[in-house]
Length: 305
Image 1 (cartoon, rainbow, N blue to C red):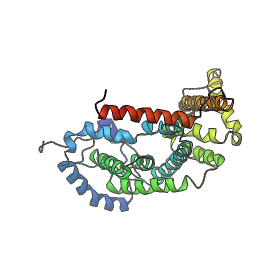
Image 2: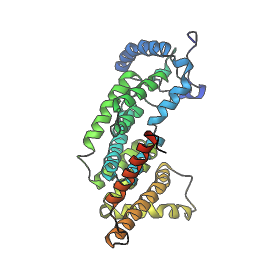
Image 3: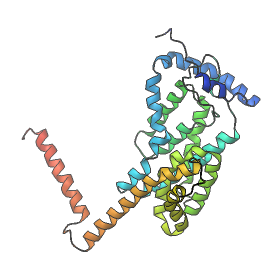
Image 4: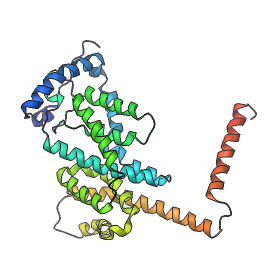
């Protein structure tokens, strides 16, 4: 185990790695590289790659995009909206960070364990930003943040400073989200973000329906375009293979349908309660469920079953 050697990036990845950066980052990287080598060696990064890959997937865009619709479906509409707005600002800030600041990843240097080093800029760490945003809605947020930071360093994807500043950017996104909530402004930011980072559809497809459903009257034209675009594309013979914008629309459709079904179910239940088709309130139903569950738990505990 102690004699294990670091795994270099895959050959095709290594050819595309970002190799140019300013002298400032050369100095900073020379300070941080020995720390990363030390951590990777004594935290068994060489032999635990699969475990760290599983950990880092917790903060991947394809995982966190489901959270807004989950919050919305269980009645946490306010949290769903704040999370959706935070994801928009996360995508915006991280996109401009990647675009404006060119920094080599640790995996582009020798003696660094990097099984699959991405060819994009190392600054900032998007995984760290995303986990900072998402973890704020769950208990033990600092634990999840530290876990993702360690995983990114162990995989040779980011320097420690990338992750520290990523946490700061995530905090800024959380600070801005409840203060700038105009849906039209957010959609404008979304389009700017999409121009800089075409892959942001992986995150925004889950946030977009929540932003629209909260203020349907503010953007009806966008909703109509979103609804009709797949049909326009299917009957337009001159269109090429799916672009990044089309992927955003295609990925958003299932989340939009889920949001519609949730709203329809909520509206139907409210109508039934108001018209006395159901003779008890939702609060009474919930209290009855809680009481029966607690009673069953007490019986099991007292061994009366």
